[in-house]
Image (cartoon, rainbow, N blue to C red; front, side, top):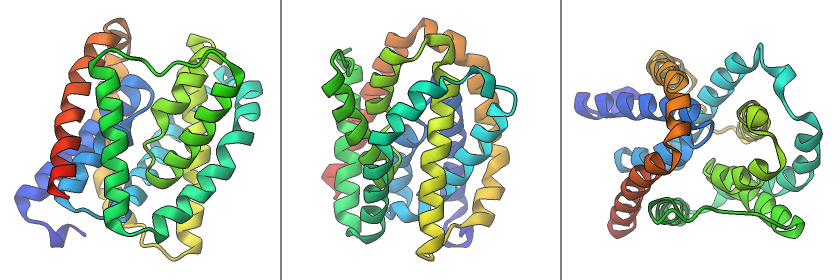
Length: 244
């Protein structure tokens, strides 16, 4: 895969996967949501990046959960998967069949929405059961299409899962969703770019470790961190949509 890119582009790719690894463990979600829009500037086909991101999610979430499965809220996870998995499967088939232009518009639009809510400190909140279900369904579809549905589902999980179990429960959710996506890719003979994913794991691992160390600090300054990230997402998604 890397033979198709210049040295300069390859270095940028490495930095973006380091960033995705940092966000994934620093926030507990959002590695794809905050990394994929930037990767699309290097190459505009999501099907190039999503199998690599998925491989990393499986590897690092599995690594983290080896000793954390006792800290997962299995009861709520089972309840929520009923609403998440069916639309996620529909979303995966959309990813494989929809035109690249449509997918990119969808990804940048979702990213712009996240960026605006974070920049203006408008959290996605859920206070009623029917809203919970709607966000889980929508988040499942977005996750199936682009792996960027985390903020929608996190809004629901934050209300129903205790803070000390939240990150580990979310990691199990990501593992399940990505397993479904990767299985579908294999069945449909999508190129997984597995060697490229393996080569990028050491780079992502640096971000992963930095995110683990920074997690507590980020949680203490959550609003400030998200405001800075939100402003960046607004700029990136606006430029992406303008370019399209």
